[in-house]
Image (cartoon, rainbow, N blue to C red; front, top):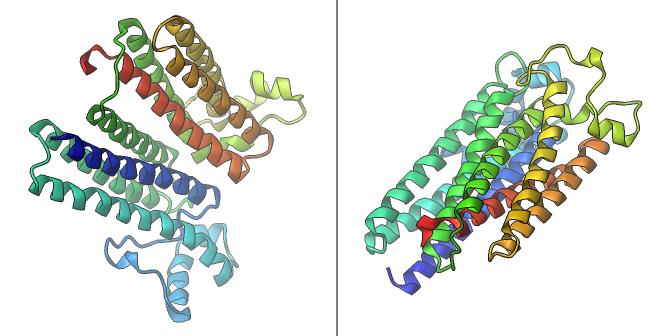
Length: 334
């Protein structure tokens, strides 16, 4: 693969990365606007075309009215209100289809032109399979909210989100591998940053749990800001030690993990001082710091959409910076 071919493939992967990140953010808007259950049918081809006239809209709305979310939460919703929530879920699914085409068509073209070596072929096939799995998990998640309880399972939401982040990380790693970036092997920083990435992934899972259970709205009332953010909930709020279902415990653990990650980032930065990795480690620390500030603002103001999305977006950036640091310090990337 010559330089020009590498450049084209890298641009292709970057375009896919941007689209997947956009997909995650639109998914966040869909969740925050309670739009995720507005489309009760899953049609791969037919679902591409939205209702185009009032009759089609009324038919779609009638189907929605037969499901628990309308019957238990949105009873009396107007057609106009339904169109608003339908828009975000439709856009989310449409973008998913576009992403599939953006990856599949150029991949087949590059294969036909023989631009791909054996290793990259395998990597890209795995990428397509991972993308397909992500689409299936989206359907699997939505199905959990169309039965009796009009809310998606927070476990399925977490699986769907963590797979999206895994897809983002994998695309970015392929971009780094196809590039011509200078590497600075440092086994200690590499090991620390790999552990850091794992901790970030755990935090992302708890972020999904927090979102799925609407635990972000459970900041303790009647306390000052310091107590609310740095102390646990009142004892009577803690029903048990359940850290996967109890929203109070989940939100508290999500906050505590944030501080562990913050001090871990400081530790990595200190260890990377006076090395070529100092700049990357400092950017990681800054990104984590911004993420914590956005998380605090999101909690204090009752999860406003803008700050919740900013919090999610900076979470993506933090993970990518950490992965970049792993790549730079990786002895196998020479």
